[in-house]
Image 1 (cartoon, helix red, strand yellow):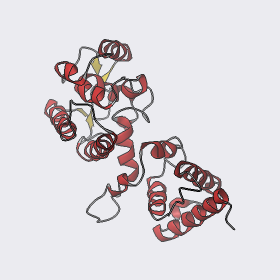
Image 2 (cartoon, helix red, strand yellow):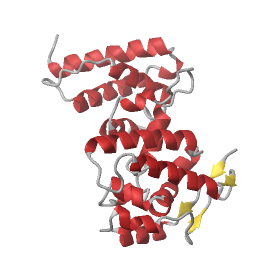
Image 3 (spheres, rainbow, N blue to C red):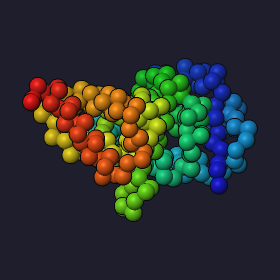
Image 4 (spheres, rainbow, N blue to C red):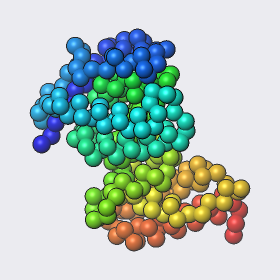
Length: 256
């Protein structure tokens, strides 16, 4: 069954963000709610999400934050492991579908009504992009759902369908999702890139990982005009991507 998630009108989202600025995660705990006067639902396409499901989502994400010290400010490692855990939970258990996941006002509801305390714990400055849903690729929760969606491997019987979440960090995924109309629009291609990337021994004294990934993605984009990656078997795809990765390494390191 397709559930419709509550969404938050932009004006109300902006007002809530302004009211929350400067407040701590602990202070915002009392502001968390399951509804808001300015919430609404998409007109068609499913049934409204039961309130109990919202309660469960908040409880699970709050638990994941608590495991990492919430409401005490997190360190870098805690933030990274929290992101990976939330990405999997949101994609696996929330019931959000891609057609809903593109809606910034859905994510605004989650960050400003359902979980403002967790949002402020993860990003204390409550930057507009992090909570308003103006850019889903940067939203505190929206970006995580999309990361999980791109790596989710439902085509195999592997126990961990989200294992690839551990391969790339946020900034690297940003490079892929920024190309969502091409590379990011093909989960199979993204998973292939991740498989190949995991096997690359990056000479960090010669090239930055970020630069290498950017060069690899540009080569994939150029070849995509002539090759249908979707039609390749997983083995053939990996072979082609490994060849491109080798070209990127040689080009950036000056190796023959």
